[in-house]
Length: 122
Image (cartoon, rainbow, N blue to C red; front, side, top):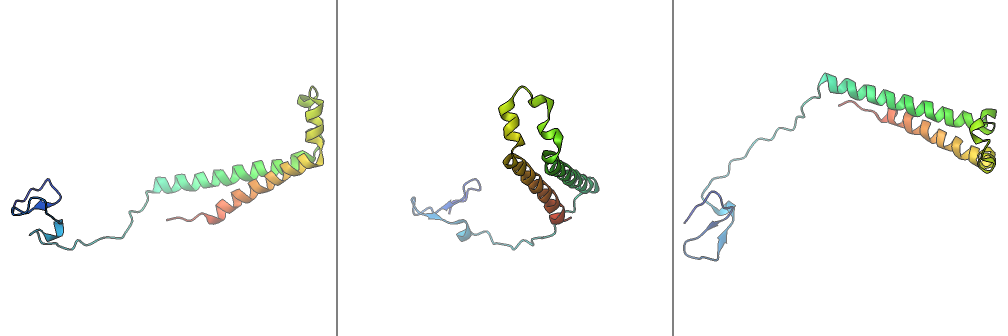
């Protein structure tokens, strides 16, 4: 038998085309103990994740509340930036557009607090 450590299959000297699997070789198999413990994250990484989740929740809540309140304020339709565009001003002053922006705000608040509820530390 010819044994070459660089080839995955050992070839038999009698049959050129026949290959043997690595389990049929003369090397005994030894069970290797497997450890399932995960390395604990560092304190710095844990605090960075906590601060990141806190900032994400704060940002989502702030933008969401602004999107829920601002479309119903008079500043929404009396915006000086919209004076040159009367059609856009009429569309944004409609109840449909205000409802869409309010719904997006509620979705944003829900997304932020959902992330806070699902947060788990390892």
